[in-house]
Length: 89
Image 1 (cartoon, rainbow, N blue to C red):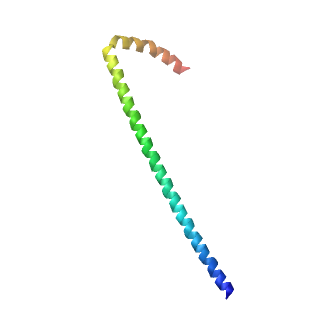
Image 2: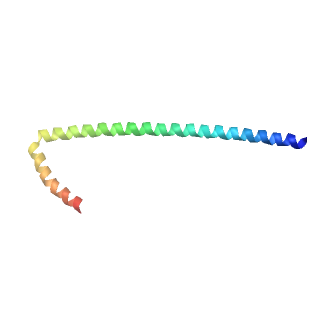
């Protein structure tokens, strides 16, 4: 009778351990999921900010070219071949 009682106690302990392990796994998965979502949100905000900055810089460059078309063409003619040589090597 004691053996049966001990066996039942061990069986109950194993059930509790399995339940606790499942709960811990679910909790860890939820925390990991939240961390991934937070990271994705931060990455999206960074990308949006970078796109906005690039757009502003593009507008500034276009304005500079419109105000100084001759100088812009001369700079392009001078920098183009130098950049081409540097990239070929």
